[in-house]
Amino acid sequence: MLHRPGSGSRLFCFLAVVFLLAPSAIAQDRETKVRNDRRDILADGTWHYNDLQGAMDAAKTSGKPILVIFRCIPCEACAQLDEKIIERDSAVRRAMQDYECARIVRMNGVDLAKFQFDYDQSFAAFLMNADGTIYGRYGTRSHQTEEEGDVAIEGFAATLDKGLILHGLYPANKELLAAKTTGDVPPVPSAEKFPHLRKGDYGEELDYEGKVVKSCIHCHQVGESYRVSYRFDGKQIPEKILFPYPHPKVLGLIMDPKTAATVKEVTPGSPAAEAGMKAGDEILALNGQPIISMADIQWTLHHLQDERAIAVTMLRDGNLAKIDFPLPKDWKKQGDISWRVTSWDLARQVFGGMRLKDLEPQQRKELGLKEDQLGLLVKHVGKYGDHAVAQKAGIQPGDVITSISGIRENLNESNLLARLANETKRGQEVEVTLLRDGKTQRTKIRMQ
Image 1 (tube, one colour):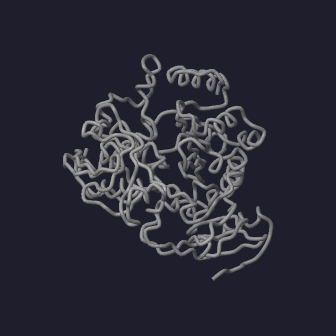
Image 2: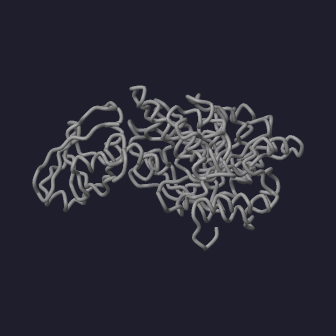
Image 3: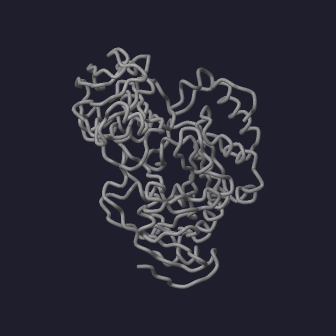
């Protein structure tokens, strides 16, 4: 049922919701990129570089909110957005002047209780108060290389503007922001404390005097460490760890990256379509949390457990509206995790280093595979170390996996990864059945 409490301008409605709801073109090696980033940003003089405390101290003095950007320097994903922010693109120049800006290029020493985000991102931003209250997050990714549908400088600018609104209303809105600030209790206080990362001799800071790249804990290593911790302890990996930070498109919401949180289109027949969402809807809040970005939507979806619906407050055609959005069973498992950097480590653990892809319908037909039968093409086999288990077992690119550890259902790579992660144990040997040149072969691989 759709309610229309009233109408007004976009700014008025956003304020009402808050109150009423209780680069360089020259190729460089990694070492050079990391060192040059530090040199250039420090020379700029407007950033607190790898110095969150400095930004917080400055914010306490100036009264400004804080913009914290986590950036994986070697990664190319979101490089264009990052470059525009560093150069103070005209779209963000004005808003950024009203923030104390911090740039963090490592996860070493970062408070994992405070800074929780999708660790498969190579760019993630936090908008926050000097007391640690988080106004919102920014940074979304759903493809290994493409970013156009997820981030844009215009959308980042819109998020910055809404962050300033929330800051202006603080602390009257502090209670509304509690769920954004308080996440899950991490297994360790900071990344270098994860047992399997201790072997890397990581410190709390980067070693700029030595091998700086090797001293850096990357964002994806944090995500991998969460999974490894469960697997090493022989525990089931929770769904939210296997399918983290669901993208809105899983529910049929295609967001406009050039806005803070406006729906660009709704996939026909999707849960969003059935819920009555429409193109042009501007999402203002989910379950009472003010929404200022697509990443905020993902944060809210990530923390849903067994809820059957989510309360959406939005602006539609100039009117404030509310809708209850029903959530289908197992909706998180519809997400694609194959693009994630962390899935390479998961593939090491349960695929022996293979990466798989769906067969085209015609290929399945030619191989005589039934509609409900597993059939995944081996597109990559690791060659080194623990990623070479499948190769040593004789598996080759071009093989078609038809059964693994007794699983024969027609699953995609994402769901097969998740099934094996929770149905096998480290050290266990599982049988793999495959097709090669039309002939059935069998081998075994060891789970890690």
